[in-house]
Image 1 (cartoon, rainbow, N blue to C red):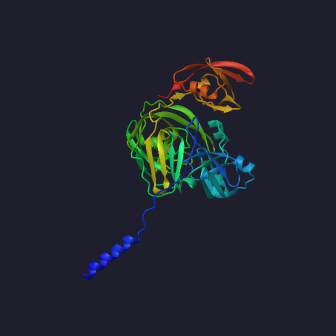
Image 2: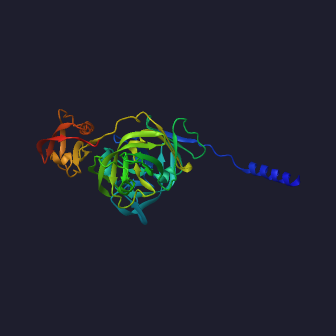
Image 3: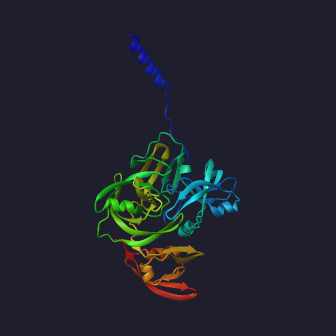
Length: 391
């Protein structure tokens, strides 16, 4: 009787001492800008400076960073460290600006160490000035909800949180980057973890090693030579499609995918097979809960939108209000049409509106034959460009 009473008393005491889990509380909510290529832009200030800067919300970043031009303008001194930053085409030592604050609408976060990068290539690609990237250093401390339908972000304190009834909770072990389990079906059915990357303006980035060892692709797949640009410069890649991609219960058909030789193992193969980018993830409203190791997704209004299957083999950027040709790929439709780097497009077919967005839309019409009017070295010329399909 005495023994039983003691055990019962002890258990009761222990239960009473356990604190109740804290509920997550809303800190702030504010709108974001969504670029034409699906990148999330957040307005924020750094340190004591009141200038409104454009930051990319990037789950593919293991820290937080500032454009080198902004640091120079603010006369901020960087410290070179032994830490390294990996990119698709380079690995380099990191320079940090230490102990700075980040001020968002309704929230200031102190003691952040910003590493420096040159984001001029991002600014050109997205036709908006990019001043920095917000990644893990911020995301690790909050629950961040991204509503693409309303283009609103909610930031909450960590704690118990009731997710929306509709959706799927992907479990993830967060070690600066978060990876989710994905099923791919093409020649075979295979599974792997892929880094969840809202800053990558593509559907999938597959490491060459994963593709070769899994034998996931059918032998008769169309594969095109292409390329991409990121931290460290440009990288040659292959472009193809995956028949079906599934995240939890959500299956997506005919998904464009890039394949690259992962020289610096940014994909961390074989633990992960590559990167799942924003052209997939922006089809969901997303709740990023790094403190709990969870990512909740639910399809939004764009979930069933068609993908872009066009292949031209060059990049079109906006520079001083003009559409400029860059990065001509060997043996591509752009090269066959005789396009050159730095050609200026001033018309396509009957469209002479000088609207870069409209020109890009015309160039993404797979199967179309386009009459392209160009300025080259001050001279007017024209050519016929056939847009290929990767399907």
